[in-house]
Image 1: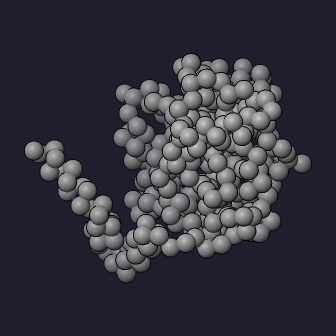
Image 2: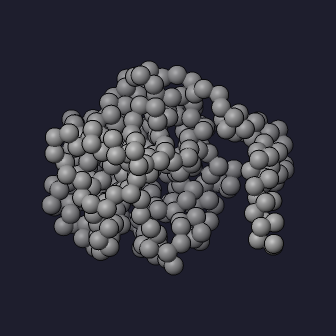
Image 3: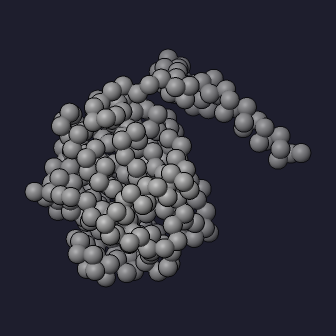
Length: 304
């Protein structure tokens, strides 16, 4: 039985660069030990790629009015067609390496209910990755030289036991908000939220937003507003990796070290619990004065 079932809803394979990075990502998943891969949706070129890479393809996934897959349907299809105890939803531009599978084993061995996540490394990749002996060491070296560690906001994968996340709202994939809700949900259920950034290197292959309406980032679209509504409001989509309850370091789980960012986040949650009647922005401005100062400066710059 596989250790992990990866599932994803790739973009159309029409744009040459998007097609290339998606092949890179999916090939990296299939190269991991004890895994299976499920590709979801009916985008152009997807069936052919699934056949080429010898992975499962499930075209019948529910979509919104614009034809974009719904997270709830993706989860249901993956759970129904999975042969493993662990599920992992992952964006189709993420390259994973053997340290990922090892982190999954370590988390599973220490917690019964959890979600595993991490920060990503951003890297420009313009050529197909050659998956031959030593490719992981070569890629890691390139990432350390040319890549950058993304800030702890926005999550590109979530790995969790099958028993978790059985009641996911009809979020739209590829838009903001649903990933933050995943962390909020885990925290409210009392599951371990495990940040494995110190133990893994996941590589995000940089790309533009030409696949989205008007080429705008996902957080500027009406579907993001709908995701936020389904999540229960702004307070539920402010959760990030900073809200992790544990870190995976050296194969062991420990409490995250307190940093200024984590302290500000804890203060914000504390204030929200006490002053629940105040607007979200007011609480955030109290907890994160530097962010508020930056916003003021942006406004001043626009007017000058």
